[in-house]
Structure formats: C-alpha cells, structure tokens
Length: 281
Image (tube, rainbow, N blue to C red):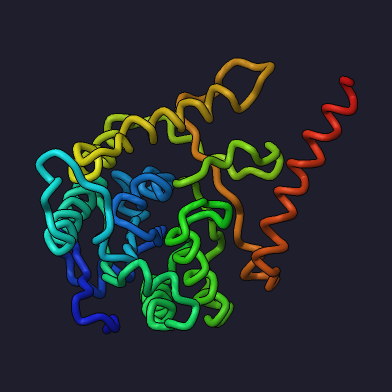
C-alpha cells in the first residue's frame, strides 16, 4: 500500500509486519487530528483493547500544524508541533494497543478542499487493505470544519468502493459538538464504563494540547460521564461513561444524501422541543 504524500507514515506499535498489522484490523478510526481518535474513536479502542481477535487501527488525516500552543510549547514552530504531535500519537497507539496508526499528513486546507481527491484515494486504499468491520469518524453535525471535511472524504471514499469490502457499520462520533441533542431513539450509545484509567491516559498523553492550553483530558471524560448520567431522567445510572454517535451506514449502503440524512435528526429534535412546549403551555 503506497500513500500519496511522501511524508505519510504507517506506524505499527508492536513491530508486526505492516501488511499483517493492517489486515488484522477489525475496527478503523478515521480522524482529522492527532488526539481525535482517542476522543471520538474511543469506542473502537475500548472494544479492541486487550483482545487478540479484534484490532483497532487509526488514520490521522492532517499534520496538526495549526494547533494552539502555550507554556513550554508557546514558541514551537508549526514544523516542531507537527513532530511532537506525531510522537504523542505514537505514544497513544502503544498505550491503546492499536494495530496501526496511519499518518496521511495533509494540511487542514487540503482536507477541506472539495477538489483535492488525494485524501479520498488514500482512504480507499486503507479500507481495501484493512477491510474493517466497523469505521468510526467525525459526525456530520460537528462544528469543526476540518472534522466535517474528514468525514466527507471518508464517506466519499466508501461510496466509491465495491459493496463487498464495505464495513458493517459506520459511525459519526462526538468531538467538537456533543450529540446529546439527538433523540434517544436516534442515538447510537456506546457504554465505555470500564478502564477509565486507559481512557484518561490516552487523551492525557497529548501534552502539547493539554498543557498547551486545552484540557481535552478533563473535558472528554466529563462529557462521557455527563452522557451516562443525563441519558435517562427517570432511572438510575446504568453506566458511568457513555459515548454517543450517529449511524452513518445508511448514507453508504442506501446512498442517502448526507445533508438530508443529518437534517432529519435536527428536525426530529426541533419537533420534540416544539411538542413539549405546546403540551405544557
């Protein structure tokens, strides 16, 4: 498998042969930045951790050059930030027992460009090689342009592949916007209650982000705990940590328009709010 960027890289934490590491993948995360996999794709990491029959691999679409920085990282150049963020991602891959991490190394502007098809070609190659059962990517209601663009590149790639290599499920997960607003019957809910020590460590490893000015470690765990507590208003908690996702499988399998598919959930949320207000006024 040859990726299009000369600066791309495939990292195998346990030193297994690259082909074998990619082919044993069962769960694949496709995120925009270093640390997105650990935030939005954690359900897949959690599912595969400590298993020999399930393996998580991750794709990082961008080079991470434009991140905010403070403290010891305040004077780091974009090139230095790219280097440290790649190192941090590799550390997370070791802790999370990933099968592989693939760095596509595009700029954010390249990922956001509808005209640039190279990322789509890379993602197609990766899916053909790994043939994952499940894919986790960003959700279409995310408020970060690069996240949504990464999801679009992923969806575009999947639509160009033969049906026999498509995953059973494709999920759009939480990162730069919660999915708490979705109706409960529309949410995909992942219970990730165990191993909160691993979950915390995975996000905390990205010191350039956490110490650099963004407490993603605290915010990520707090959101998952809040999801679990506020999931049901008239029942006791059934888990301590939950992740929400949108099932994007129909967008691929049934060729549904992504805008129409996303707005149906928004419209159902609107109808639910309106009906409740009318009932109580």
